[in-house]
Length: 60
Image (cartoon, helix red, strand yellow):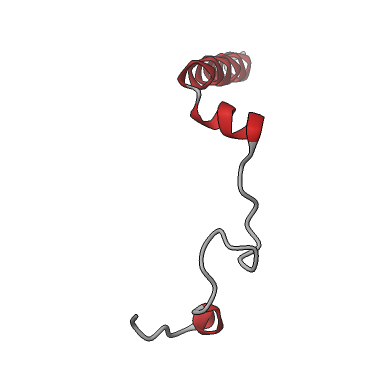
């Protein structure tokens, strides 16, 4: 493994997604919503509608 330099030098022994890393792993419903293509399409459409409404309001 290459020598780490800079601010993260002290973190060379911590593996990503280990309990020491401090990152929460997605579980259950959260993992489902992140990977469900249908849900992503619904969210995409909803966000685009919101942005369109905001743009239309700003033109008046």
